[in-house]
Length: 507
Image (cartoon, rainbow, N blue to C red; front, side, top):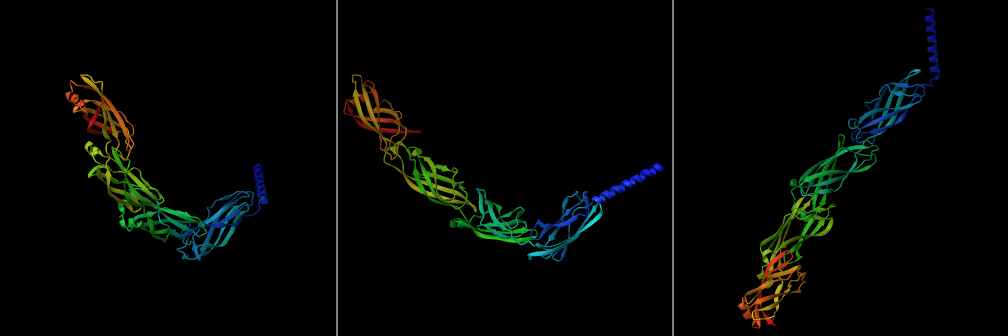
């Protein structure tokens, strides 16, 4: 019993000693100083006010937050305050920032329209310390800026994409925030192009920084099947664009409006010319003047062009090759190649020059921000059809004459009667004397015959007097009737060619 009592006395003595040591090393209660105020999540009708205090613990041991309370009065009216959580531990010789926050609803408080609103914070912080409970009073007076509506300006929509199905526009909206804190907002509105309302646009939640200006692009997609295209707008070169919208920030709406004109691309059909004329065909070149005021290239199509010669359709183009209108003024040349087909018969080609009526008609499709317009193409022009090279028998020479046969040398010429060169000319066929076929002649590839140029070709045959009595009789005279029946070719084109002529005979 005595031993137990002695142990208890010793433990009590040690505990008191520790308490005295802690008490001797303790410096004092925590100290709280005002840490500042910030505004977050602001819109035109409300904002979150944060008031902070920096608490310093001068003790060698941790202290804990045991209680926190505060009242906030803004513009003479109370506002609920959210205090920091109880139990926060501040380390020895450390510090911590404690935050009081409050959602200030300016519209409910009747503060909208004022520049600033005075506020007052009062409260206390309680801590557990080695020396016991400690309570720190809090008090701060300040002025809170009341959100002001930003300056909003709308510009003419920018074109970002244009196809034959529709258009994508971007409505540039400039938002200037003169408040000393960031401001959240969203944009929405409807767009009219050329008259009817064609699209409703809505953007995501945005934010503009304190004292900053930001341009937000509001995208608008328009399907052309929803647009009533106005021909008068195309003739005028522009279409009226109206944007009716609103900037929403919290529960406050700022109206936004734009009424202006948006430029439209234009096409002007200038005429038809001919190029690359040859024996097998010609290229009709449709010339179109262009004016593209848009910042991006515009592709033509779907378009149609048809060519007829003397009322007979010879070519049709249902879709043009990739053709784009570059920004600014310009000119397009759209080629349509067509062949002459049966128009170049030997009889027509070897006779007098023949003029045909060539008609090019159709329409070019032009997408614009308010729809796809059809630009008509229709022109008829005369075209002198090409003629086949002129064949002529230049000479006929008889040699090695016997009682039964003789050698006949025939010299022929091919003359290009066109105003253009003919490539890869070849002639082949049967040669007849006095109506009797005596042999075949083939020139091979004579190459390119320039306009007005001539090529020579010769052939040598053995004439059998016993089998060709009429030919034998003919060569006894000074003039022999000659004939050629064959074809003339140029590249992939091959046409029949017949010619007859009385030729002087030489020996």
